[in-house]
Length: 480
Image 1 (tube, rainbow, N blue to C red):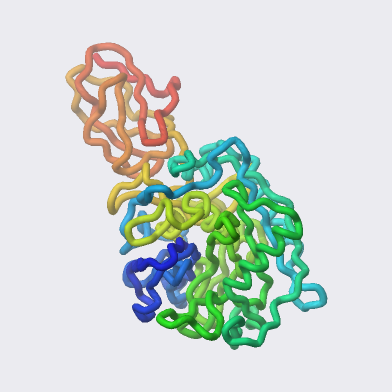
Image 2: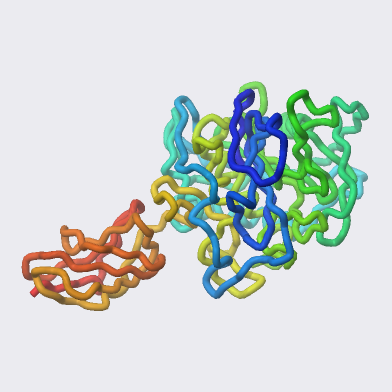
């Protein structure tokens, strides 16, 4: 989930009872969810700052999610309940991908030589396909990455210009220190859906060191056009601190059966210039005996549009961390007053979906289907009404229920069908004159009352912060 400003205090609404002493500073962490709701609420979720980790956790519960024909859940809020949007830019904060160079996202798979740890080829292939697809569709307004172009920093405006880096297999041995000031002890018990658990633990300091080692070994760049996603194999726990937790702090780890269970992933910055932008990507956890999950679905199997459940689940987490890294790479740029970044504000909120049960998706990128959480859009934000979006599509208008009316305006509301209508953010123009009483019933349907207008034929257009619907043969209206 979110961000990390070291040595500051940021607190958001909490449900998981963790001492106030841990609420210092921040990073970006993707929280664990659960419960009968698929999206955390003020009473069900916790978002806390632990150094540079932002955490939100919800019990998995047994009810699962109410899956309908067109939406993944029937009770999704417009953004995480209890949060305080919009995002605010903090003076001096930078963003990523501001120039003409592509933002390269490089996956690193840590598989120690001679160990029992491994990644399925299909897991790595789907991640690489996703990154390649995201790169292929750069510049388009049809997926979540298009929402990022509205954010600017002291170094310019973010562009949707992404490229997939060549995957790296890191064969280094896991750290072997026995010092409680250096190492973390893995939590025992059943963690994964198959009943297996952890056999090793890595701290954030150890992960940072390994990222630095990989970058040095492969002569890779550390700058604001590179993100390194370090994927940990199944069985490796991630904890932010070593066993000797610093005074005044409390341990935060990936999902386990103790109060330290906190996050599914996080992003941060490291290196001598703080420009090694990385994401810690532990192996995804769902249908866990701990009662916590990194996927919607409660105790039921997660949605898997590509029939590779582990990778399908981790892709939503990856998109969350990449989006936050792009808008808040140094954890000092774009975040809400409660510390939430764009990904945090929309954790486990998916919006309208397509496909069949068990394989629902909400993103089609380069022709392939994925299910990833939405991202927060300041442009679309309406308090209590809108904020999380799947894309930045320009609206369309496909039909009018009535194509003529009196020049004095008024009368029965006109029903308009189209796409990408936004509640509270959509106007309808008859020529250059705005209609009145616009009611957006759904992203594809609204009603409007025609204004007074001189006699004649005009084009009706729908307008949102993303643009104006193109002129077509279906938008003609005649004032008599």
